[in-house]
Length: 226
Ligand SMILES: [Ca+2]
Ligand SMILES: [Ca+2]
Image (tube, rainbow, N blue to C red; front, side, top):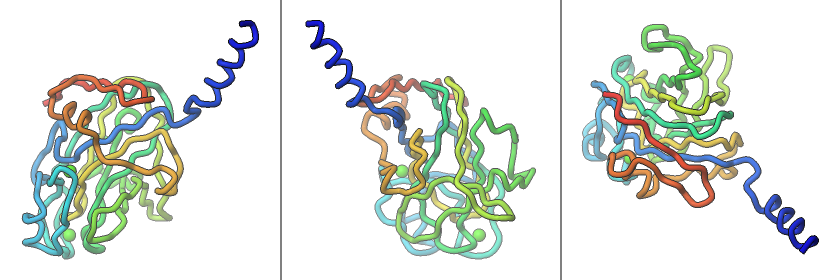
């Protein structure tokens, strides 16, 4: 028995996830708060303006309606309140459609640590997300589109409540889902962002208050902040 116990411990250390202890997927359209002109939409709604963005997760996404054209945007947002189980460094990915260069950006704040109360007013490029273009749903890691270059963002999040806000910058930019992870790899294949599970959707709908994905830390949701 003296020998068996240390071996078991050694195996546990090898098998335990060493880094990527947390991930959480959210449906964009199930935000805790959505302020117009950001709205929930279906593919048919968007098809009136441009190529139809077929098969979003759960059939819906959010956007400020508009054509792929210069101008439009700068008002409205969607807000998500999440409980982070452990302080650490996190990245966020979005599943997006962006028709063209006039419909390919949002502002993004995650508070704390971000302190800007309204990047639509401040126009602070720290919070500007250059969304990768494409007419089909694809994942893009939230970045920081500075005037001097574009860099992947990461956040030092505290344990506890964090508010993620996706602000309209250009109309017609579409968001289907969000994926929050402590996997900081920049390569999509290494991160493998995923869609929300039925349990995560139920949490967003307020049908349950907690979920414990297999092998993950428990995630607990705050009450709606409206
Ligand atoms: Ca536009
Ligand atoms: Ca969706």
